[in-house]
Image (cartoon, rainbow, N blue to C red; front, top):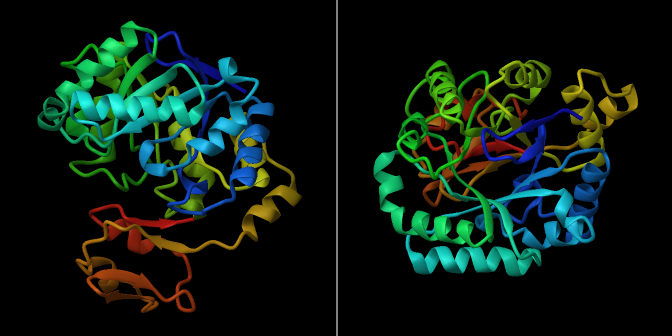
Length: 315
């Protein structure tokens, strides 16, 4: 496993980060023991970095998995805290439910611009004080917006960025993938650490996974890549890809045969753009939100490119 420092933080992380959202109650809803065993498998194979968030409601998975090896695993958590009180509650919740006395990285979740960062300034100041006391090792933001990456340059206390980066630019709200890459290049020059998300475009680009992973791995400004994994086969395969190898035919067969589904996230606004583009007529609006007819859906992922809210995933 290849390891990189996250900018100037001193945090040494595996190039492959375990994105825990897909196993969580929001998506696959894996049983706690099953999810924890997957994380342990990943840790045993050299992954030392896991991404989570208060929203994912999966701290319990990670607590079981890091037991006995907490000092060997970098845990990154996120919350929507905007005030001292909400920041304190989020950090306390994370530490309690993870059974740890520190969080390696704590981030403001889904920042959009300088305006939203300033709107969360009180929480940011609380996290800075918590860092001084040793409760947090690094402070960051996650974002789908180029503007937030650019804005972070004004805040030296924001040390780590978790932006959406994939070859098609799926999910970038305010520009192109080329513009996002230019922004993170500036951030890296400023000493910030970068670990990207959604290399497979929320599963919509899974049919070109090899090219998608190559795209992010060939960019030296991306120190680590968070990838959602739901099975031992996916862990083995992804580690092989990140090491420049190929998994066995049996592992690849297991992945190709995995039954997947189209997920419409709860924040769907029912705009109907995806329905217009679905040639299979698998989508419809029900009670103001898009719903999927799984008998018609062929999991092509084309609809995801037309969702401005990035709420369509293949899991």
